Amino acid sequence: MNYELVIGLETHVELSTESKIFCSCGGHSAANEPNDCVCPACSGMPGMLPVMNKRVVELAVTAGLMLNCDINKYTTFDKKNYYYPDLPCAYQITQLNHPICTNGCVTLKTSAGSRDIRIKQIHMEEDAGKLVHGGKYSYVDFNRTSVPLIEIVTQPDFRSAEEVVTYLNKLKSMFRSGGISECEEGAMRCDVNISVRPEGSEAFGVRTEIKNMSSFEAIERAIHYEAQRHMDALEFETEELVQETRRFDDASGKTMAMRNKETESDYRYFPDANLMPIIIDDAWLDEIKAKKPAAVDEKAEDYRAAGISEKEIDMLISNHKVSKLLDDIVAMGCKAKDAAAWILTDCAGILRKDGKTLNDLTITAEKLFAVTSMVDRGDINRNAGKKILIAIIEDDVDPVAYCKEKGLDKKFDASAVEAVIEKVIAENTQSVQDYKNGKVKAIQALFGACMKELKGAGDPAVIKTVLEEKLK
Ligand code: ADP
Ligand code: MG
Ligand code: ZN
Image: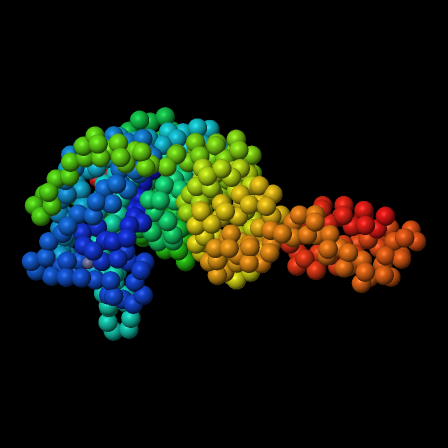
């Protein structure tokens, strides 16, 4: 018999906020040592109360807008009770009854064509801490406790591992470009729910849930393994399928049972009376909408229309900081294509020499635009622009002052260049003689000497013309 794969995903995404969800501790990425980012509130000391981080609501709403969800004006928190050493309050604050976003949809482009995946809901919650096992003891690190998460729950609409990976990549690039999450390794974790059913059948089969997967490659392997296990069970009655929670073992490539599937009542959910309901009124929603970046597809389309290459578009879409810098200098008047070259080629190249990447770029839009506009106006040539760029990236100099100080602007016009050329001609009599004797190539040596004299800041076209004139 032929079987159809049915998959639904629950994806946890760590939000890029400056502080945790219910206290003012920094996000855990700021922490260096275990438990150096912990306060009485997030370590569950008696009497401490949660205070809602407004930014979490804004980022959750932005994610909901990007995934075409309804934004619920009334949203509340619930306590999910269970005991585990990495959960200091013995409950997790999450949303059950009134999640912030519902009924969304995302369209995927896969080899099977265009596919719509329905989003059941997005809710906000806090992360748990981490247990570190070593020798005889286990240690607990609360740095990650109360780091804000959104959980995005889909309907069981995926029909292949390929669709799942396409969806996750799309979420990742959307969330990066939207400043919602950097989605680094481990900051995006999935529970993968899988069942199979005979092709053409409407009824769902028994599902299992593979917990806590973060590598896309492992997710793909886990889905293949688990789907085959289900099909074998149905086809050859190798085992009885039960609804349960499983984990994927990377080394063996197999999934193993962890525990029977817990149900809602196992967690004794109840409303968290320590947190007021959040009301998202129209004014606030409009404010969030106005700040929401253009959808990824839309944005890629704009970049394409501006003549930016596909490779560059990929780099921009996956890096919010860089695309924002580009958008900012384009808004100031730089041509999009030039802006892409300045940032993705020049800045990236300068950083690479120091073993850094564009993520380390700290140049402001104002300084970068000062450079690109001086070049566009013809005040300096591109070479000089690049020199200024290096000085900005390395020493954060003021571009205009630096340009004046180094005399980079003067070396551009013909009259200033003339004096240098005369000097070079006077000093290189042999090359001049060669040129006059018909050895045209000798001009290259003179040209090189001029560039050297001008420390690379001269405009090649101007130098060539003036040089040829003088030699005549
Ligand atoms: P629970 O409350 O038990 O976690 P949900 O209804 O919230 O169940 O569903 C959890 C996830 O499981 C959702 O992403 C959903 O799409 C998926 N899911 C539900 N039924 C199936 C099924 N038969 N096969 C695969 N995935 C399923
Ligand atoms: Mg669930
Ligand atoms: Zn804290």
